[in-house]
Length: 620
View (tube, rainbow, N blue to C red):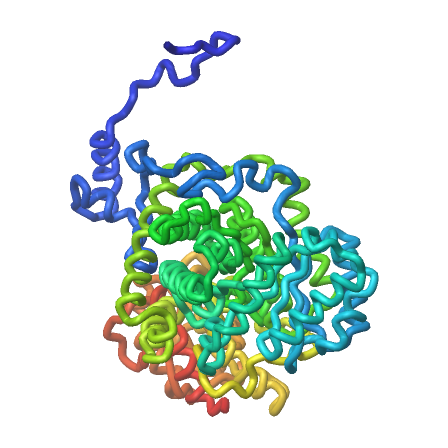
């Protein structure tokens, strides 16, 4: 039965239902106008985008892409959320990370956060980057431990930190059923970061105690961030988190715990990136996959995964760090829509050192705005029914499951880590992604695109590295690392000489002919910290020599239209060489122009070009 709107309007009534074939035919016509002769499914493929893990984003999704087994929120396979109410009751848990070594400073920071919207604390305890175990009581002075869950990160002294936290619960009269959070035991994650072979026995002991005495406190963290930070894809991150969780299940059940009780001791931690759709799909796929593991292990009721999402450290940039606020907003949106119970927004200056009060305020307010002003948490599984998200969830789950099985065939995660299999796989993934970053196929705003070479650097107090001095382990990468190395060379040159490396922009003809490519060249060279000089605005073979000498540059780039290149590129390049140019580039696709040494264009290896220019200029 068709229900007519109360006002009698039916906006779609006058339009026929188009078929998929009709849509493809229209796509063929558009592509034909652009010079591509394709038909049928090939036309759709031409508009598709290939992602990591062999995934593809298509231009159109229909009801045929809807997943048939998503279930209901709070019920297996938990794709739509681990709880029936989702985060609708009060939003997700806003969990702020702290890594201060001084107990008094840490106390001031955590009280300020809790008074202004933060609902739980993630504390680094022990080691060079954390508050000393004996200082934890001072750090938590004034904190209502029955209201604020505590998540520990204590890789250097798990036993000491966990014992001290439980002692504080007892000392301050917190009922055992009111103690919430996680002790953060993650020996395999620590091995992944340091190369030190994991001992699972302490994690098992704490899990047994929490299961027996603290019903709301979990002992074990299944942290996938080491694999994300080593350059892993979303599918690899998920597959290795499954392998980690299974390894812990084996250890806990081997000690006598039931599968359901063992599952109840695990909290899973994932990275949330600025690709909000991939983040949404990742969290949904993670719940589906863990539900399958729990079902296969004989405890389907234990498959409701508890998730802690952390905005990606890999995406955070050191240059133009203010853009990180936008990245973390998108990542938090993805984490919230994806159904994470707890979300940590890393401050925008995370890559520079210890955050200041302003950065922490913006971080916590990111969640507050999405929850309170955007009402993002009021809908349970807001992505449910999106054909794109459902299809992406299915495909990502399949890719992750395949890698999980590969890891299990290698002997499980401990064996895969120690054999080098995990490191090799992640390195290959990062190398492929690094090539895209170098060619700016994956742009980094403020770094590889729209850089600001003259910006004043943001300075922060250095943050200690908790894994400094570790004998091995997986690397930690950042998207900006190749361009950051170039910018550091430029900074050193500025400090030594008082000026930045320069390139002369030789623009030919009127503004309409050269502006697009001149802007491209300024943007490209700026990504390497190379100052572009375009004075005068336009040159020719007679004036370019004097202009080059006045600029103080010894490298030049020609910028104009293809038509003007045919007339003027060779004579202007010759004049530049006569005037002392050590290298002459042309902005455009490679062709045969006399005295032109190289070509820069969209998709060229920007890192290789910029490195060669700095080498040529003698910038160490």
